[in-house]
Length: 346
Image (cartoon, rainbow, N blue to C red):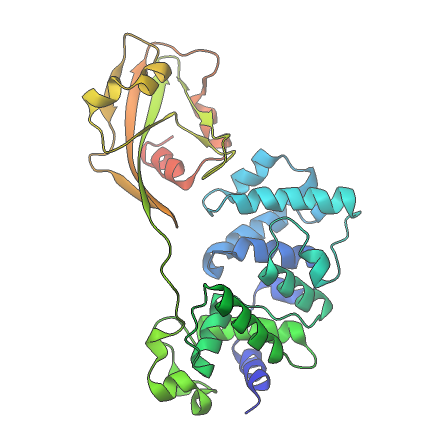
């Protein structure tokens, strides 16, 4: 059986009609690939469409303010992608005269572009023989060839990249790369793959050996950290509210949030109002405080779980660092803060 031909034939019949599949413009392909990193298509598609509408060319994106880009990205997560997106747009415009590199090695030099993204752009836009290896491709190859080498090890990455490169057809590299990713997303799915109507069923090692559920193998290395966040919604009688920008590196860098008091464990109101950080923020003797959510809101990130309380604090007045309440939605905020603003009807 010709593996690549079978995959491409399946794709011709089953592929989804997606806007970035109707173009070979490297700007649109790059934009879609950055948005779809760590993101499913159904979630990423509206963001792609909004970015294209706001910034139809790389020149438009380069001219944008970072705050505007982060606001448009709001809710998509992994905000370093948005910062890298904006940085790279400016680099392409200012250093490369608006022209994206036309090969894998050149694309790999762009900030936020790794092996997978460089391979995707190079193959789709320039038909370069560069194999893509994402989660879908790992799954298809590990099952079809019965490979149990962990995919998140140096040996695994090298093994699967080499195999994927060997399987490339002589032409139409971009179509094939998109085909194998689509095949993994829709046919060889993580759970309950439809093996009965799979065009590769006759020669799939995992199907023959009943190891579909155990492949691909991934070592568990990630240790989840628990953190305890207390956000203070500090309102004045003159309709102003406090916000702050996260300037340090880490989650939500450059985004805005309500003032934060982080504690070692879930805290009580009495403990909170004695906290030094709380006293720095609420610099008033006359204030009222109430807890907005009775139970901690657990916000799960890839490497940490945030146990979150929102506290409503009312004070007579705030200083010049406060903003008008009706402007808070103009600032890019993490989805956790956005959901609170929705619940509090701001």
